[in-house]
Image 1 (cartoon, one colour):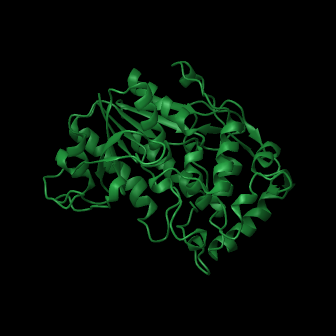
Image 2 (image 1 turned 135 degrees about the horizontal axis):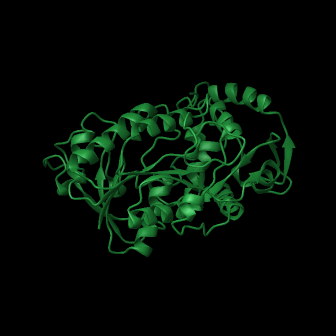
Length: 376
């Protein structure tokens, strides 16, 4: 079986490749990423392979092989491709030719101000992936959406709940737009995971959520007050459990939508006890009011759009995925605690998940945001 995975260097992509190596060692995986292991870089010109040679678009010689560092043993074939680039559809169609399935995980979650525009990557890029899969005749496509695509609800929702998104959240609204792109595709399975965590992504999650002015080593300390509002609730799932869900869907050739989450919902007090020691009750409006100027000034990375999403994101029912035999192997509290500990240590596995050279101070904007706006 040959599977092409876009976004293969990200948190879920890394976990999926671990799962496939352990549970389906005969699967041949081609990973697609803008930055690939072994020094590969973005290559928008379809005439150029990552090694500098020239081949036709989609030629297998575009792929580079390199041992994955860190927690991913073995060798993987890689294709360097910016999926949002105008040339991407042709390159991807060539790479997808002969594949039994495409797993589309690539998504810009909190890109820096100097990185490609989110909509270019997320929506133009997803359009290129879907068009290339159809052009190449790929029989099965698995796409990662999110529970963030759902319209807000005050009860656990099933897969038929409307995907209208959460106003004020760019991540949510773009996932909802992705869902509309997938309507009518009988060959597609859509995964809607909740918040995905794993220790190997600790450094990346720290860049997304923790101010460089805050010593991350303080996270998880029992005396640390955590400002959270009453009524906050969240579901958390380990990246490897998401990878196992994808592996199962590939094996069963399932289509349609699947919620992926822990059944246990963590409340504000429990979240605070994992992040620190106790919850400091703070109204959501006050936190949003503080988040905007500090994000705008570049001293912390959390745009108010993420708080709005956290406050309004639906919880989900996972009965459909359970009917295939899937069960999470990692408890949500334990998975989150291990990830918080990794953030505190600055731990990251490799590639985009690894700690960045130059220290945390480079993440400061000093008067301007270092990340693109997350308002939707």
